[in-house]
Length: 252
Image: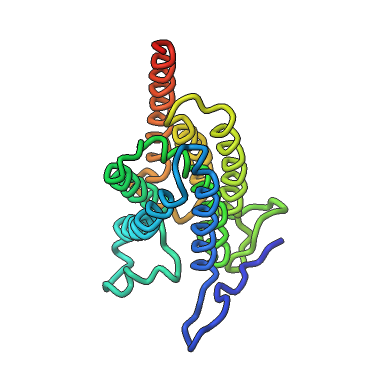
């Protein structure tokens, strides 16, 4: 049975360095390195990936924080509070939305096919999520309600669902599946990205139902609402790009 560990990794000149930030940074670095390695398979270069990362990563973090603060504005009483991400408070959906906007504008500027780039990076995004979720464990956040299951974790003296762990395991499996699909089975740009939208959202919908700290839209959990929308959008995108690809191949 796991207990919440110390969220502080070490100190530098009195500044506490948290595991939360270390793990998120580690996930980002590994995602960039893997995407650079996979870039030639998509007719791109590692410089294309690095140029994208320079914009996508900071914008994604800003978006994740802004999204979280907007849905929890009553808990933030100053700009300093809103900017303090070291204690946690990043919403993955905000990061994905803002990150994808960065991808769109960088691809447009560099004249790179948007969906081709999305297919390249999205398996690594799933892996970065898997690593970053462990930051929630160190912060004692993003967990579920009470449980008697043997793999429960202790937070504030209560045994609860380790929802961070459920999502981390799923995202590792999703990384493996999407990497294989992208390399062996993809027949049209956008298919890998569409499958991420579908399968990540299916998992998030059910895991979100267990969480006790969900961001809300009225009486509904916003992550579940977005997950339903993303599943529908992902199915539509997969069908559209597949049919478009089949039509293009038929004309050759």
